[in-house]
Length: 299
Image (cartoon, rainbow, N blue to C red; front, side):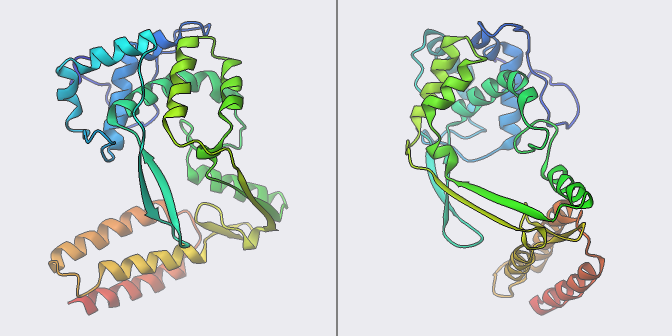
């Protein structure tokens, strides 16, 4: 990890190749701290960008921190079992339906370590996950989840169970989680490190469960809904889209028209890249006329 500018494999595939040497799970911490695994972890953290943690160190400052010898000290403390993860930096963002969503931002150092751990554990645990699980798994994405729902609709299914575990990652039973990890991870040093990461955040043992059963026509899934077997934008998705366009085409924004057009174009490309799988040709035509009117009003 001493040379963060070492040549990386070409390509833009976000699926990381990991060091999967341990056939037995007794020495996984050595695999986590393997140079190649750490290089891959740093590459992913750097690509994800993100804000600084509570220590104030940014992504751009991390390589100098490593070259200053601080990473060697951290790695030694990890091996000895003395490393203490920093508490996460809590920030709040607005939720689309009102209220606030709490986010925890670890330090860049802890993000690299966590990514390195994930790259080693994923090959051990991923094969046991449900084939219908798409969140935070290599090679899987939201579009695939939406297509899976569409295929279920074509099989004649018309009801969906919408379940939301409120603040699950804050309130999950850590003892139970560590017990399940211990079924496959025998390296007590790594288990100890993961346990310290769990204790670094806020612990709340309460769990609030929200669930409902609705027709698929009334469901909301990753910003989409379904009419028959067709994928459509959920009304909330369209509402938020228009709200954002109004913000970007506000004539009182106080920026140049060139910059406004750039931001509108940037937002539209990102939005259609995700929501373009839905059926909505005529609606796109209507939105096109509406957006053009908004742009003309901004002049």
